[in-house]
Image (cartoon, rainbow, N blue to C red; front, side, top):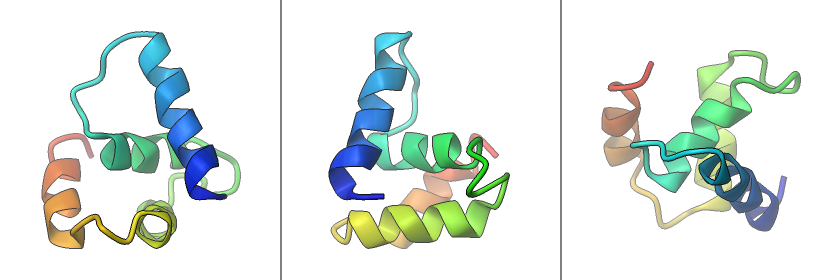
Length: 68
C-alpha cells in the first residue's frame, strides 16, 4: 500500500474514536487485522517502515509493546 493509503486507514479509524497510538503504530495494528497481513506483526511493521522511512523502528516497536 502507498503511504497515502496507509495514512487514510489511520485517519478513518480516528474518525470512529480516539486511539492512544501514534499513526504509524495504529497503522501496524490495523494492518494486522487485514487478510493480507493476518496477524503478522513483522509483515505489518515492514510495510509501515517502508512507507514511513522517517519513523524510528526502535521507538515504534517500543510503542507497539504497549498494545501487543
